[in-house]
Length: 158
Image (cartoon, rainbow, N blue to C red; front, side, top):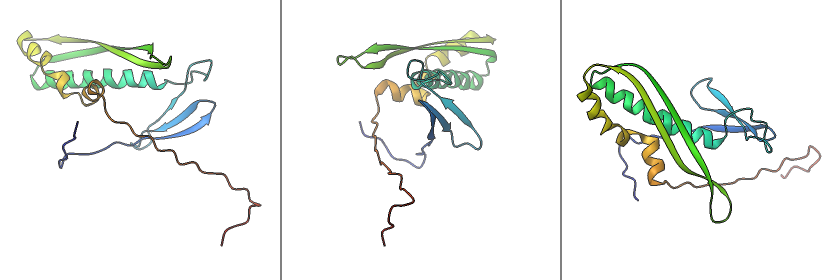
């Protein structure tokens, strides 16, 4: 799969810093917005969502926002939206846990013409950036750059 480059290309970046155990402080890069992520016991202390929960939240949020955008553009009166995203964890052939499936249930509370809603139901998923990326699989590269902590007594290279 080749990505098309256009003037609209952009990226998002987040920074993570280990606090303790498996708990990370995540800087979302939008001002002061931070959150804590952690693994559930026995590894972590469940002080925040883990990556699987965040992935489910990202897919659920993206689909909900995409549907809401379409409904509002179609001038449908949306009074509330409730969404549940459930990530099923499965083991692969090597016994490693993986997200096997994400099921999303979106329940908008609406008033007005149902035909406008039906049109959005056929469109909204295609405009969800995260969901369509996850569905198709996307390349992920990992680069590790170890930094050794220097002792104050180590000689300084000239």
